[in-house]
Amino acid sequence: MSQAFNAVKAEEEHLLCRSYSRYPLAIARGKGARLWDVDGKEYVDLLAGIAVAGLGHCNDEVCEALERQSRKLWHVSNLFYQQEQLDLAKLLLSTSHHGKAFFCNSGAEANEACIKLARRYMRTVKQRDAYEIITLGGCFHGRTLGALAATGRESLSKGFTPLPEGFKQVPAGDLEALRAAITPATAAVLVEVVQGEGGVVPLPADYLHGVQALCREKNVLFLCDEVQAGLCRTGKFWAFQNYNLQPDAISMAKSLANGLPMGAMLATDEMARGFEAGSHATTFGGGALTSAVAAKTVEIMLRDHLAERAAALGAHVKEELAALQQRLPEKIRELRGVGLMLGIELTGDGQPVWEELLRRGYICNLSHGVTLRLLPPLTIDQADLDGFVRVLEDVLRAN
Image (cartoon, rainbow, N blue to C red):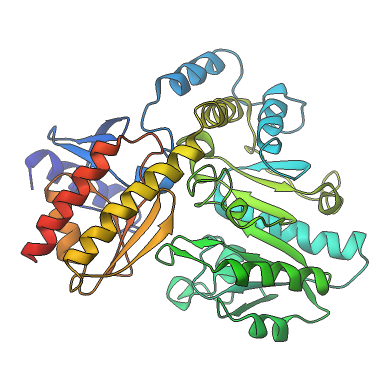
């Protein structure tokens, strides 16, 4: 490691809580689908800050919107009406069948909003003491205590128990297990239609339709976590639209403000009746600055048809990867994903492959030790993805 990198690493060890396993990189700047480290080495970024920089790093139009708004108004709290929130809400609601928006700061908070609204709607509107939230094995909904309880992974909750009550989990893909789990106390079922942290696992369409139908049959709310898969990532503006689903509410964050911390929930007008003034709040959520940046981000996504671009580019990359799998079936076990949310599950230990890709200038994520996860900017050039496939083949042949 270089002297510059070692200096950053040593300083961090003195200053920050050790809650992260860092990649061996200290990033200095970024532009588009490129990152540069403190030594000036250039990388193709196939992770985009974990699906956050959907428009790429330091997008010129987003930077201009940020600068304009920064000289007008930053934050006054949600005690005041703010046009910036309304402009963003109009754009987001135009992409979906939902009628109301709630703004917050992160994906975990967006999921917490969905959970709280589901419980309160059942109790105050439907007059039912229904509070349980059912989630699926392999899911990831965040790291707040409530979101951790929904995620249900012992490896993530170790040392943080007891977690909040009122959560159940059933195996993904097992409709009968879900049916058996629903009781009069069930308020909602929360799903990721494409499980991101689980290793990029799209759930089967017939199963998802079965989940929605079962929710309708049992008068239970149907919620979709769109935090990672939403906002054009899977080839539709929202991942649930790939399956023609109609969730009562969805959560989002990640690329909503292209790097500024922002989350949101969209709910139907009916479900939104569960909130009233004072029932849920956040100091920073939907501030003027982040709302203006998010509105510009969504505007560009719609204007430039980035969902359609992700569908076409993702199909091309999957075709190239499928050809690579045919050439190296002993190296690649499975290809998964939709649009520009892709997982390459290897047959053996992925760590040396990931490390060599990084050494050669390609940043991606390694999930569960075997799956290379690709979440590149939606604006990435096809040539960068084709270059990755070529380098991946070289690396796999050598490992």
